[in-house]
Image 1 (cartoon, one colour):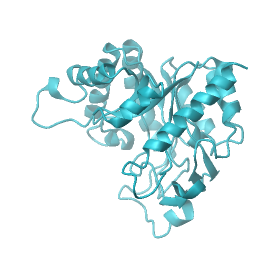
Image 2: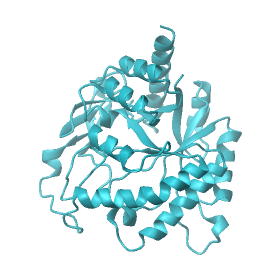
Image 3: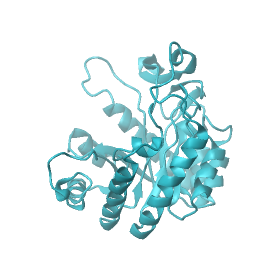
Image 4: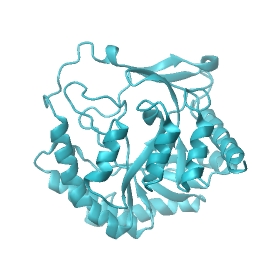
Length: 325
């Protein structure tokens, strides 16, 4: 059965206790992996020593660290700039170290320059909860090319292949799966920057670019549902290839050009049909709820706590219903 995980930083807090009380035993690690100045190699955040300490913090609280979603700096890699080999060296060391610690999945992303984009963080949703959204027309108003000018898809595929050819063999040896996160939003180009991890077809191209059992997909449903009219079929397509290594369980309403995020039970996707597809392909990795609405009012200091708990309960109910059919 697919397992529920939460993305948690490495500092214990009240959410950790609430997650355990809700029956969550798995965690997606969120840590700073930027190289630190003036420290020894063993003190770098991506060293085996540092990562072992982080893993121990999670384990002491009763969580199994299943995925690391943080990334070392990779902008030179993605842009093909001088210094990319040094960044690749850090990525390879990081992968070797998490493999040595038995952490089975790393979730890289490939969004040069612009990253994740939103145009609003205060869109009213159900009961006055606030959600995020993206309107491409709004974003592109007075949006010139970036300082890097036009970056073509051909350049991006060349840079990605260069990266994968060096990293995939290391991941194979370390027994670490590489679950590539989609572009968010899945549009290309934006401000002259190609975003190549933005379609189902391009995901297949990614898989075929450097074929390997460890080269695969982070299936972020909120992005994938903007790429297809039939998300369960996409889950089956990649699942039959054994290429789904990690799932972001969330939903949206709209199109890639104009969408709003939603409560997990209030989007445009048939979430139960998706869970049936995961069951059908035998996916037993983790899913994590993501992109929570801001619930409550100004009297609540952490507006995401209740939304996290709601999401856990909703997903658990879906899993129990589907897996007992």
